[in-house]
Length: 214
Image (cartoon, rainbow, N blue to C red; front, side, top):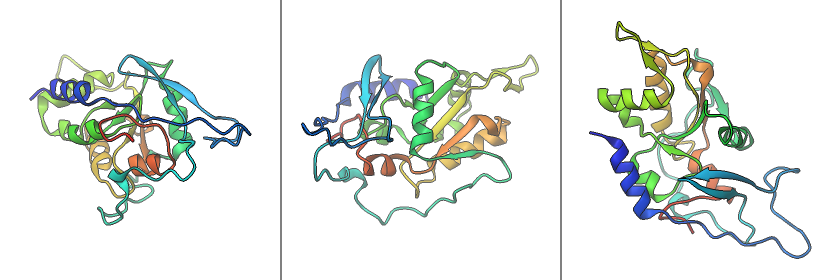
């Protein structure tokens, strides 16, 4: 099964942009960092500004307002592999880097339905389930810069750095994909785990895109 068709069809038909209000006239803006108000990424071929929602009293997206899901993931669930766990600011640095460096990718590891509902602008959909199908796995690895030798073994010498996320602290989809990549031989130094995922992202009012964008 080719996940490319499903991802493209679902996203192109459901794409929506979350409206974001401007800061007040006094300049009391909600900042990403003390010296960073917003930045721009390319998503589906279009420029998109990333910033935090400026509307007073704005609430977390309804897709992530419940607290009884899953089980909290460890801070470093891949030991002894040295996979870096990212917070928002570290993840944002990879988002910015990916705009000019083709060796960095922002990867949404959730299933296609979740990706269509809501995702982070600039992310590309590679569901963790792709690792269970030989054809989908090889397609994904090819996009990740991995080649095959004449003997049919994976060559990770040109593997890209992947900053990966799923639904939140409690979601096991990114950990599942990272473990499968590690088992194949993917360098742990090139795998980055944004543990907070979508729930943390929307809790801070960051820009989102998809059919569930508010």
